[in-house]
Image (cartoon, rainbow, N blue to C red; front, side, top):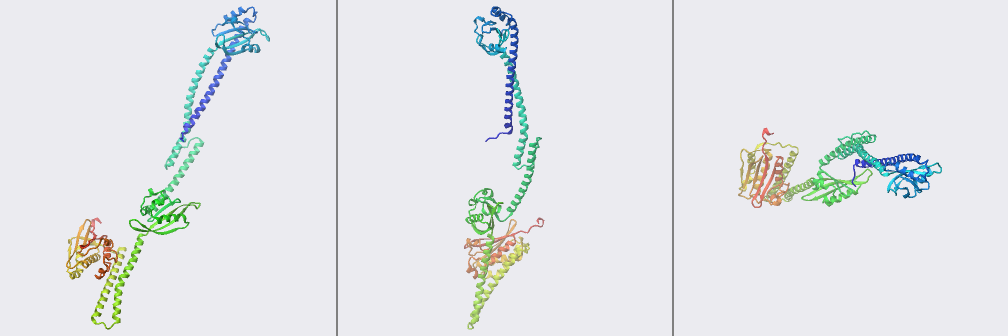
Length: 596
């Protein structure tokens, strides 16, 4: 329904009241004026009738009928005035307009009967004789109670009505003028009443939009003044509460936004009410598009959907672990609790999602590490124990057989020692990295490469493998020389072990932008693509049998990766089956003193 402004609700009523009052007053005035004018006219005609009666009272009416008729025609000077003399029996003996002989008997005329009865009679009616509306006034002639005749004076109503018409026109014109003035006055009054209310409405609408800077003007009237003061007080209180709510909401948003855990709030119908940033990233959705939608529309994980239902139905804290399979497998620890109103009724639930994929992976790495260490240590320990027991149990072995057993024991002991040394080295690296004990300083890269190549010179000579170094003498990098030397030595040692005899190993170094790249390339069998992503893991081997045969511990590349990491760089591998592999370590250039 269309609503109207208060002005146009008040003003029509005021206008109707004014018009009705004006019409009533005008009608009453017209009626009273007409009665007054009629009474004055009757009194005037009655006075004239009394004057004329004096001329006929002394006459013998029936004998002097002709004289009376002539007197009537003589004294009726005005053209609109008519004088008639009627005997008590109704016969007309004199008339100023007509021949009395031609006129009807007037005994039944109302004014005649009233005059004979009351001494004065009048009537306003249409005259059949002159065929016009006329006002008749009659007075008796002769001594009461037996009048002999009646003198009647009448006038045409045309003049009377014309005069009243002029008066009516002036009244109507004055009434219209007064109506216009009244309408304007009522408009001003209505506007005066509605204006403060309209201003209050506009300000209240501004309050509804959150603009509390305005203040209502307090009107002079008590009712509106009290209302305006109450609204101003309400606005002040709302402003305070809104500021408090906004502050609390901002604090809440900041807390939720900074949380690493995902927070999902749903109502009792399983529609999403709130998501924080972490939940958006975990669920892969946008909070703005998800609000108001069902959990099943946004969350595509059946386990999480079922958990939300359980949280809504449960009265206690609910916990669970779920896995999520999308591009990669992820693991989450989730907790849920029902939300309740002041009456204890359930209005929804809140679910906190904590991603523990890293913990799962670390736990898996730990288990794998323990299993791998156990496996790697079991093999040489079992061999050493077995051959030692054989030597102890048998004294019939010749010297050559015993010597072979002792060589195996020595070789396995060396392997066991290498594994332990690598484990200790790896542990020291992790500790130094965590405690920031590694101090990097500018160093010459070529010198490190030369030392590492010399360390592998004997193994390379056994297979007639040449180690070539291609590095500018001026290339500098941020490094720990001992750690970098060990990383390069591991790479060259691996290249020599896995390269066929009579080949070469290329050790290169060049600058690349703000960094330095040093690489070790061999001509070995290469590495299949499915192994490239995992060869830097601890104890991971592409060919386990060959690796153990060559004396590998399975920790060399993992140590290289960690050394590159503590240098602020990384290590990468490129390999083609049958053509060889290239391992590259990325280091940082020294920072100039002026740029520190």
